[in-house]
Image (cartoon, rainbow, N blue to C red; front, side, top):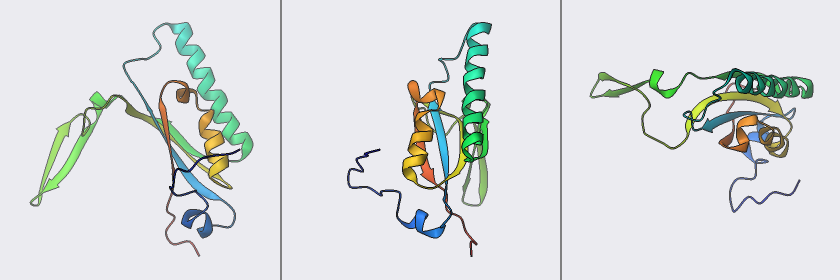
Length: 139
């Protein structure tokens, strides 16, 4: 798979060098939460697609974890300013796409991670951020 890095980190740098047996990545799944499945048939089809995708990750030996998140209206933002904890209902910022869930995987390299991320059902209309996980304390 050819991939343009546009002058950015190629994925075979520091993260890959830290582990000889692969790299852990998190897929942050963003989409417009106002565009949900409406009918029971659409919801069943969507749940089947997500179940099939999770099984694909397990079959490849990549799957570490993954969950959906409640909508942003159920979020609480926490800040500490001048030693005081400040909480706000909802997300930190209004955005067009919201974080809706994640997967954590362990694969050999960024190319495999990108291939796996491209198969996420939400990638067809949303955005998948692929980010290597820093693993501290590895010997």
